[in-house]
Length: 397
Ligand code: PMP
Image (tube, rainbow, N blue to C red):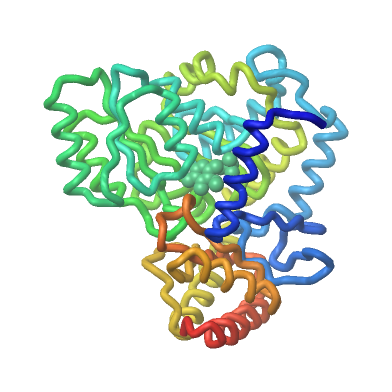
């Protein structure tokens, strides 16, 4: 095939550059379910890299719900939500989400990523400003950019910096609306946003509050998330969540006041212009939320496993950062060593992906461990043995 020469040179040079700097991400297809143990290239590996926190992605109840709904409604929803892609189960899911999050209403999207693209730009525009934590997720950054609002980054979880920037923005008189956006749980470090302080600042300067709780939902607040964990459910304007992590399926959502959700239904572009989530996925999400609202067993198991792995890695001498949740980074530092560490873990039987720039700042490369409720103690012990062996071999511990 003959294509553009300019593109060909651009891609060749840039791919080579990424590879030489250890920044090229190789994708290893998983041959089977994404459970606590996975098969890659014919080998069995302990999986410490999925977001399937509660093990629900492979839970029989979700699988059955997915099959039943697929038989009843078909494989696809057939249209965008605002034409005739809204099936009764989409509505049921949104009602459940509102219950789960303790809000008046909720709206579901195709993914957490497109939920952030949808929700921020539906409310904020070029006359507005957004105060955004410097470590916020890529989808928040892109959602902010899409809105054309002025983006003001504050230092990670630095409340003095947030307060000063909120005051300056408010007193400048330049902006019609000002929003503060934060992750609920920061995905690369596992620390929790200081929501009570953020809310206090927000109330002082009349800021719109937006919490993306992709990693807190199903994990904190007895499953309801970081906002509930702090008892702030009636004070946060936007509660964002994903259905792809603890819930184990796919999709994203906003939970909040009825007027906000009504507005998003008529103004958020992915809701208007992208086909609705498949019936099977929707039914599996409903099943998962029902399970979480009726039992804390999986959540407790997740925390037990998270604490066990964390303690084990810390005792071995790894730098596990300041995580307050089951997310457990092993911070290595430079990109090339981080990739090598992850590769050696892989060869020894642990799948723990290297996370490097641009996902985290340069020089803070890490192997991020995501223990789940589905891991057994034996699996975690085996993983710890491998960590010890590889860590010593590379002189990291
Ligand atoms: N927000 C945050 C904070 C995330 O960590 C992620 C997941 N990578 C997303 C949004 C995107 O969610 P999804 O995978 O459902 O698109």
